Image (cartoon, rainbow, N blue to C red; front, side, top):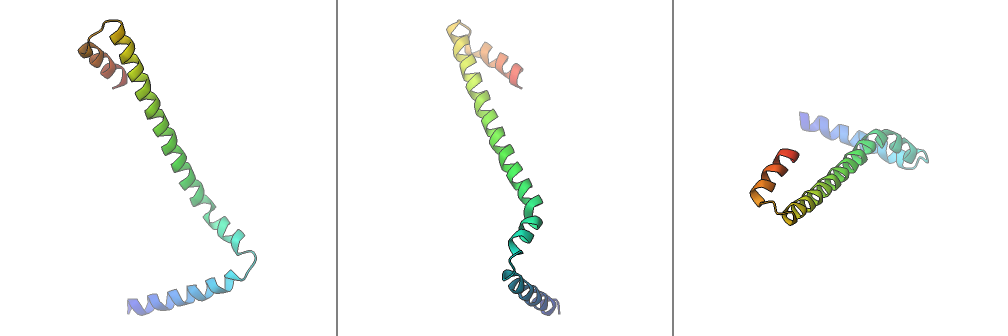
Length: 88
């Protein structure tokens, strides 16, 4: 019974979509409907890129700090403890 209802629903929606395809305002209507979701998708991607950039920057900063502390004669164990304290 549910399969029959689903088939009828899909058929009706397909017919409505085919009618709208010829309509010039179809693009604008679809964009209006999709805009909130597209903004969320773009924001999520932007946030992921920012987070990745921040991680890379932190890694470079830690590596530079380790190099400087080694040049100043600090041991690796001491450096490790301090870095872990500072950056959790």
